[in-house]
Amino acid sequence: MQTVFDYQKEGSQPILTSYVLLSNSPRRKQLLEFLDPRIQSVEVDERGIEEYFMEKFASDDFLTRAAKTCCEISKAKSDMELEQGYLYISADTIVVADGQIFNKPRDLAEAEAMFRSYFGKSHYVVTSVCLRSSQSLDVFYTLAQIDFVDYYPALEEHIQAYIHEKQPLDKAGAYGIQELDPRFVAGISGDIHTIIGLPVAEVSRRIFAHNPFEK
Image 1 (spheres, rainbow, N blue to C red):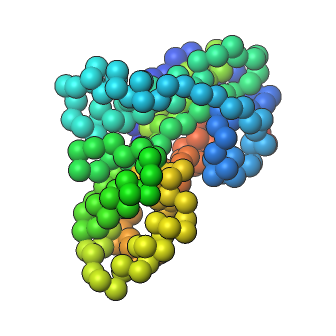
Image 2: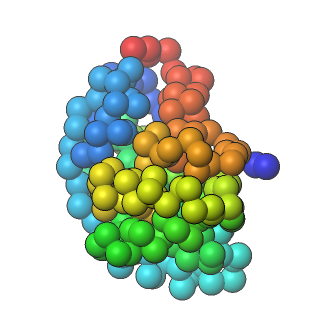
């Protein structure tokens, strides 16, 4: 299964001196600790962008449409004035299941409905990343497949515990893979960090493969 896809690449990455993570996500901040990035909050109309590009990419299969749209969201987050020598890193994560995009649930009822829908099936997590400097743009996405076990009654109390104790409302698709009871997951294909919210290995490779600056 292919797990890394290029979306847009322009220019040539300059020598970098600093990094900016355009996200308040504690999970992404932790994953990028090795870069010691400056954290900058940014807000975009994610649902408006999603609606526009899902229609624009209507000729693609649903998963590809969703992944390309995810890339446009991460790209929009870095559309700002850029400082020389800085690399701006933005990302977006979506869950695709049953021909739908699962964003962050609006309430616990929606979170529970999302979560229950995974059992006995496979679903996908897409994380798009935009690496932007004053001289370059590199947008890509990574894909992971998650297979949940078939539901059986002994899991019920653990499902309820997850929904009511693990704060699913701040997570795309209503779950964080690192918090799941291991009895829920039958298998994972792809980089687990795609599911957590940032494919660190691929980000690092793209930054440092041709760049002499190191942290």
